[in-house]
Length: 255
Image 1 (tube, rainbow, N blue to C red):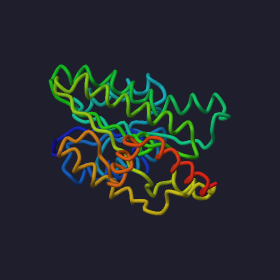
Image 2: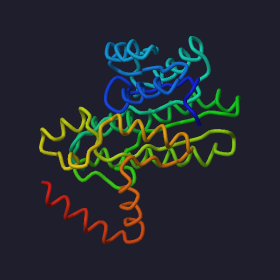
Image 3: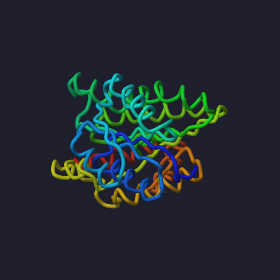
């Protein structure tokens, strides 16, 4: 799939990976890039920079996602690529407050469900469309300092897999973007709080966006900006107990 002349929606598009995606898609010749973000002012700034359209959107609310899809379809045209990129991370384990668990579930999982629910009918009617979901290496592996992030990212990966199976023979392509550390505000906050174990080896958002363009061109399900994640995933699958022991050692050395 080539970006040229495509109508693309990017949630969480005002900062970090989302902003880099918006800029790269525009540079690749997208017809229109719709910058969707809960921070409407920041989304407007990015849209102005790239000649796109900004739509303030809280992806945790289905009504907002439905409005985003309808607004794009009516004002711009049918959506070719929907990048469900917005996400949040909260430190903590099983003691994490129920409200925080729910917020992570709504943003990291249900936002993908809402996007598929509202964008797929049009794509299926045309027999063509692309869903790109920003998951995380945590969806393939885990996150040693956040139970909510680990659980919800595993779930978002599972939903992406399900979509690929359910609709892959009906013209719908699905990719799951699974980077490790990326130099975004999320990683910077983690480092300030003593959770910066992913800083070493972290990529710039622009590097991730470049890998996304390559992955979409190849129509690969897994897009791994950090190639080593694939090897870690293989080790996990072939010897789960050894992998768990290794992760316990990593946790002990980072807390």
